[in-house]
Length: 105
Picture 1 (cartoon, rainbow, N blue to C red):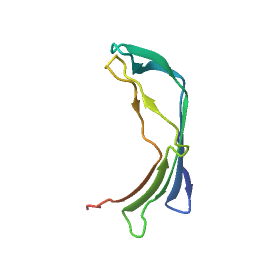
Picture 2 (picture 1 turned 60 degrees about the vertical axis):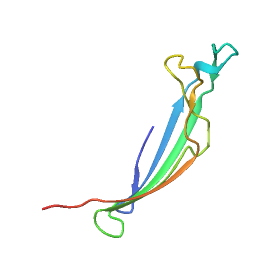
Picture 3 (picture 1 turned 90 degrees about the vertical axis):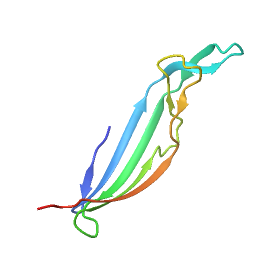
């Protein structure tokens, strides 16, 4: 679920909630390099971003975001037995960006 709350002209707060249910896949390999199947718990990811369009000057956009606020473990399972367990997702992240849009006539 993603939404945008606009306030005071060109400013917005953008919260996101992503939920992934229980997954089953390779959790490890045994001594013979055979896949051991197991369960990965459900995951809830909460993100939020603050965005300012036309920040200081027209065309300049400022954004500050925080992703995976709860620092939950997220895993990406393979659709096949590739010889290793699921790959871990990102931990909590803080991002900052500035971008400029050029206007041509």
